[in-house]
Image 1 (cartoon, rainbow, N blue to C red):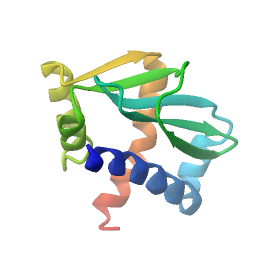
Image 2: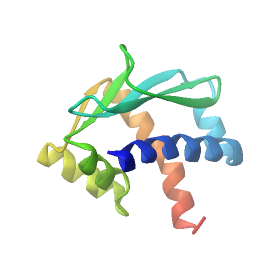
Image 3: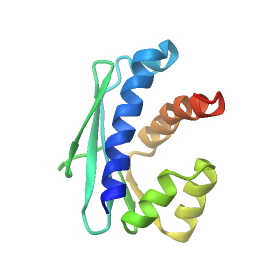
Length: 126
């Protein structure tokens, strides 16, 4: 459970750094307003807010996210989010129902676009 919580916190920090250091990413989030959360079935999670070109997060859940990613448990969430081949892990998790996504799928796709900026850094060895 602790590794999952730490990973969600680290995701915020990584996104903040990427927005700050990558003009393309900064432009991608510019003008965007979005609140979403990642959680376990047991209700452990973190919510994220993108507003005014920045991302913030807080421990716990929010009442009205635009979408929610719910993982079967913390171990599955950690494994999926930290997988080297993120897209394959996500698709497999959706197929196996280890991950359920509810809410605005247009916003989910936008978020996937945001995570591409993180993948780009990984591929460059940064």
